[in-house]
Length: 638
Image (cartoon, rainbow, N blue to C red; front, side, top):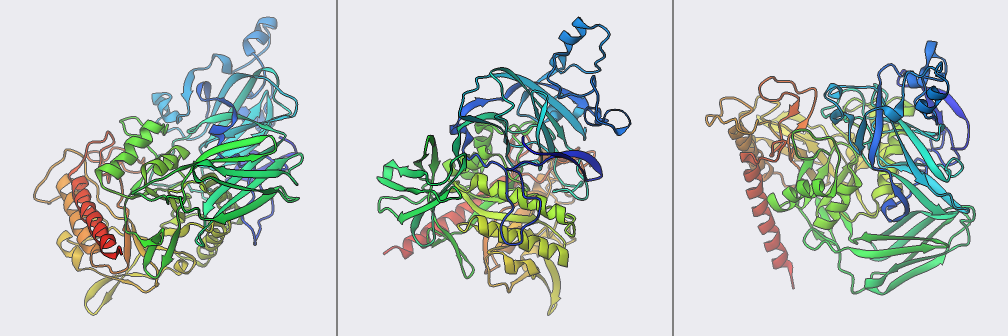
C-alpha cells in the first residue's frame, strides 16, 4: 500500500492507519458520500485465487505484535507479521530469540470466527493474528489486490512482512492493492484482527448479539488488468429506463469503450468513459424483460466489458417506490410478510461461516416455511452469500448498518466510520434485486446530534442509490388519548426516510396483558408507510406451560404473536411485518441460567432449527395475507 503510515488515536488505543491514494478521504464531505477504496464488485467472477482454507492463528491479548516493549515499535522476535521462517532462522542461529512461530502455530479453517477455534476463545475480546502462505505468479501489466469479505472489527493487513492497510468495520468488504509487494513464488499474508470496540465505534461496546471476532468472510487474491472495472451498476429506474453505470480505475481509465450486454434480452449498451473513468448509458425497458419479484425472481446474465477487463453477473430488474401509505413493487402495492434474522448459521456452535447451504437453510424457512416475501437482515450488512440467495429465492431484503443504540453521534470521526460502512455496503449490493431498503440505524434515542448524524446517512444512501427506499428501525412513543393507550409515530427522523419503521414489544417489555394488545391504538401522522420492524417474545424450545403463567414458554410466545398480529390488523397504514426473530441467536448479555444461557430466545426456531409453536402462528397469518393479496391482484386484473 502506497503512502505514509501514521499513528492515530482510535477508541483509546494507538493503532497504525494506512493512508493510500485509494483510501477514504480524510476530510468529511458535506455534499457527496464517503469515498471508499477499491470496490471490486463481483470478485467471484475475477481471476485470482480463494485464500479460504487453512490458516495459522495466534492469540495476542497484550497486543505484543503491535506495540512491543514499553509501547515502542515491536522488535524482532515479537512481530507476527515478519516475512520470516522462524524455524530456519533459529536453526542457523541458535541464539536468535523468537517468542512466536506462526508457521508452527495451530491451524484453523477460514472463514470462521475465533469463537470456534478453541473452547478458551468463547468470550475472548482482543487481537488475534492469522497467517498463511500462497503461491502466485506475477505478470507484467497485471494488478493484484487482497480483498476481504469482512473482518470483525479492525483488521491490519501485511503481505510478505510489509504493511498494506487497515480497515475498521466488521461487516463490509475492503481491498488493498498489493501489486508492488506480490512476488512470483511463495507469498505470506498476515492479518491482525482486533474485536475490541469502544463508545466511539460502530457499533459501540454493548450490543445484543455475539461479537464473532475474526475473518468471518472469504479472503481472495484478485488479479485485474492495468485498467479494470472497479464498479458496474445495472438497474431499472422508476422512469422505466434500464441504466448501466461503469467506473474504471487504472492507468488509462478515460476514453475507454464500455459495453454492457444482456444476451437474453438482445440488449447492448455501449459508450466511452469520460476523463474520470466513468460512463452511464441507458435504454428503454425491453418488452421481453420479466421483472424480478418474490413470485417470479427472474435473473439475467449481464456481461460488462471495458478494455481488457470483463465481468459477468446475474442481475434482476424491478422498481420500488412509495405512494402515500403504499409500498409499490413494480407499480403494485405489496405487503411485507417478513421476519428479522441475524447472520448465524443453524447449529449448536455457529461460527458465522455463511455458506450457500447455510443461507439456503435459513432463507428457505422464511420463503417456504413462513410463506414470507421479506427478510430484515439485522443489525449489520450480512454476507453477500445471503443477499445473492435472496435474489435467487425471491425475498425482499432490508439491509442495515450497525448504527445501534447509543452510538457517539456527536463525534465526527464516528460519523465518517458509519458513512464509509454505508458506502461499502451499498456499493457491494447495488446489483442485488432483492435489496429493497437501506436502513441507517436501529433503536437510537432522539437528540439533535443523532438527528443530524442519521440525516447525513440517509442523504448518502440516496446519493449512492436512487432505486431503493431508505428507512430505520425507530423507537415508539406511548401516550394516553381519551382513556386509550396509543402508540404514536413521531420521531423527527421520519422526514428523512421513505418508510417509517418501529420496534414494538408490548406484552413482553411492558406490563400489558396479552389479551389487551389488540385494544392498543396506533397513530401514524407521517403520511408514510409503517412497518413493524420488530416485535417478539422469548421462548425456550421444549418448555411448555399452557396456563401462560410465566414467560419463556412456547405457549406464551405463541399467544404473544397471536395478539400482536391481531393488533397489527387494526393499523391502517401498516405495510409490513418483520417479527424478532427467525432463530435463537447467541448474545452474551442474555444470561438467565435456565432459559437463556447466552442465547436470545426470541427465535421462532431454536438454534438447531426446531420449530416453536409461534412459527406456525406466524406462518398461518402469512398464508392468509398471501391469499388476500392474490385475491386483490386478481380483482384488479383487467
